[in-house]
Image (cartoon, rainbow, N blue to C red; front, top):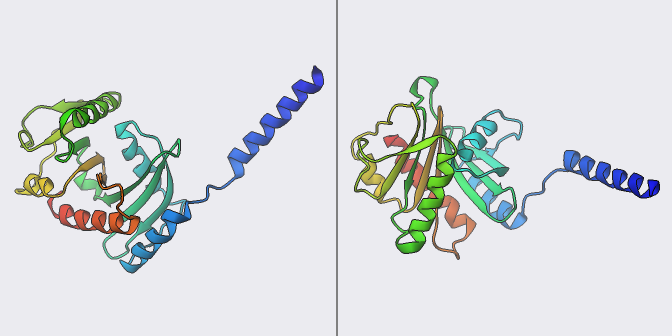
Length: 220
């Protein structure tokens, strides 16, 4: 019996050491095409120790999703960041764009869902799931007052924070961008595009996300 307990303890120790010291290996089926697109657009790999990555993960968790950052690219000329995240269970991969505001431009904590392509019972189920996750982050839905009503967008703001303001025409522009989630935490703005095309390549997804980010950044 003692030998069995010792064996279990040794196995547990080995597992802990592997978890602590093993390095995640990005999926090459995603990493290679993503690298091709990003480098062609002037992006370079960001150091995994860069402190901005923690801020990006914190902002991403606003919708109740814990994810690993697989790779991050930054474009020096404008500071735009493209981040590849994988769910903690490995089931899904996501590309998000991150824009970093000046500290003087901090707009608090809020999330906007713009999901015009998700209709019917399936769309309602997804929205309710998001609403439940957002409520656990102390975010409450704003029914009106920020101009989003009637535009297919749902705005959630952290309790006690002021409503965000948008430049004229921004919400109209948002409507033309398809299904998006905007997550904002202090100086970090995350833009995630939700594609309904399951055959879309990673090259195409990266290019579309970059195009939409460049279009939206002027209005934020």
